[in-house]
Amino acid sequence: MWRPVPDDVREALDQPLPIKGQPLEHVVADFKTNVLPYVTGNIHPRFFGRVHGAGLADGIISEMLAAAMNSNCGGRNHGAIYVENTVIDWCKELFSFPPDASGLLVSGTSMANLIGLAVARNARADGDIRKRGLKNYPRRLVADASAEAHESVARAMEVLGLGSESLHKISVLQDFTTDVAALREAIAEDRRAGLEPLCVVGCAGTVNTGAIDPLDELASICAAEKIWFHVDGAFGALAFMSDSLRPLFKGAERADSLAFDFHKWAQVQYDAGCILVRRGDLHRLSALPRCVEYLLPAPRLVRAKILRPPAPPYK
Image (cartoon, rainbow, N blue to C red; front, side, top):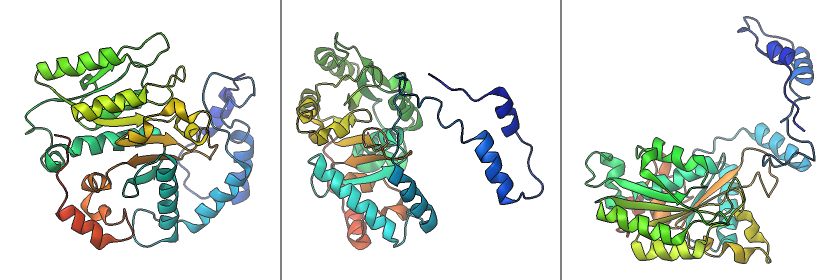
């Protein structure tokens, strides 16, 4: 079921730094012999041990066109940026996010989770954390997530300087969904201990079992407690497109930030993920100054919003 790369092929690919260039036909021949036969290792139809999108035949054309354009979508005024804006608008409509929400196309939900938690962190204290860091913040920030949550959530906490120990893993029920009662108690206990709950992460399909957390209940808890609600929808959020499955994900549309992948259910070529942020002003408040003006086609309006941002409710 799994086709590993043979030892002799790995040795052939472990080449020293080339001093001189090689003819293109030699490079292509090397690719055909040592790379192409070992695509992913798990494409056998009876392999059920790992999630992996198949990609699409016309996606090959898309990749070729994108490579030919070679656009720098980090800024300036390229046509590809407007394509991204349109795709983000489609996603906002799909998940019933407001028109003034924002979003980005990213490499996958691991990066999308990082961005969602970064916006949650930076929204504290009117954005002061972004400027002054966590050192002068009066309380330790903590987050809560299901014990079944993807490891990228803990890694995001590490990258953001919060520490993986600040991610409290909430016990799950027999169906592997978050124990809501345990979550309520964890939030209360954190407050009693002088900690500040930053975020609750809900799973719209876990990695191990596909369990879907009670997202609507989690959204209500976060609204009442004034905590950021982030949904990791890598493995299931795009089922929102199905009329019959959408009720399972009720509450995802209430998330403050929503992360999901195109390269799973949508079968888009790797890597392709997305992050949506309900309040676009908070997303822009978290962006780097020189990059932020490129997040929307109207940079003057964006700059004006940065200079006079509304007071975030997440304090």
